[in-house]
Amino acid sequence: MDEPVFHKELIAPCGMNCGTCIAYLREKNPCPGCRNRTENKPKHCITCRIANCEYLEETNSKFCFDCTRFPCQRMKQLDLRYRKNYRTSLIENLRQIQSKGIEAFLQSETLKQTCPSCQKILSVHRNFCLYCKEIINPN
Ligand code: SF4
Ligand code: SF4
Ligand SMILES: [Zn+2]
Image (cartoon, rainbow, N blue to C red; front, side, top):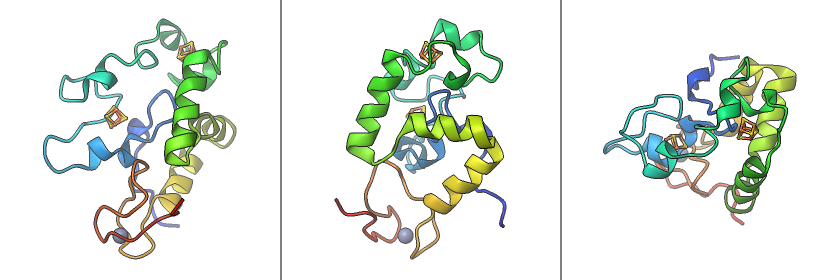
């Protein structure tokens, strides 16, 4: 299999693949991803209560699945929003990383988030390809 196009630094503590985020993929002033704690990102990601959670610091992996409170209320709310709006479960992402490892997760993300028409990266936040406009999972 080809090398995954995503890197592990792009996977946020909550299981979000920042490499598929609309803010990361935009041309103007792109966000560098959750684990890059610069100011150059949307306010809700700077002040994110998961990324800044005191319990996250105590985990070895710096992923929420390693936390004794997982899945806490914050994680459940975020997961519900992503399942409802973006057909993605961040809790499921974390369980995959936990059980199969980060490399296997990166490979499955590459398969899932590659446009079948133009082979570019699909954003989790859109149901069409940003580049060739192919509709993905219309629902
Ligand atoms: S906006 Fe948030 S979710 Fe998107 S790439 Fe930046 S840190 Fe990640
Ligand atoms: S699961 Fe919840 S309490 Fe635990 S590190 Fe993540 S956000 Fe914090
Ligand atoms: Zn495409």
